[in-house]
Length: 84
Image (tube, rainbow, N blue to C red; front, side, top):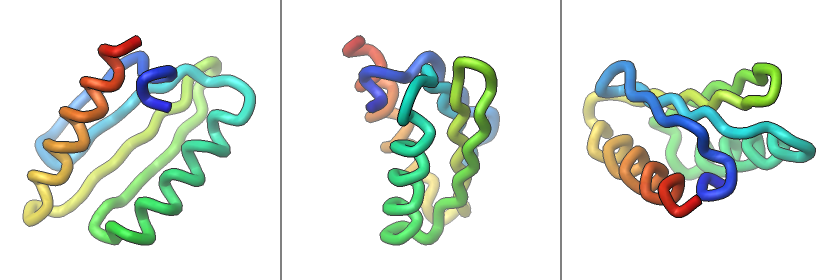
């Protein structure tokens, strides 16, 4: 999904990440499903989804102890977005 939909990745703080994804039919449902599954296995994440015209914003944050996990997520997501 990120290789198809990512338009920007923003890291406003070390423990926060925001992804902007191109919207479209079914995108919000796919993102919400992903958030639910990730929350189930990685309860240290907090996710928010915000629809905005043709975009869907996915925010994630976590605690200091898991910063390396967010670093890895940001790196993998950026790499997937570059494959577009």
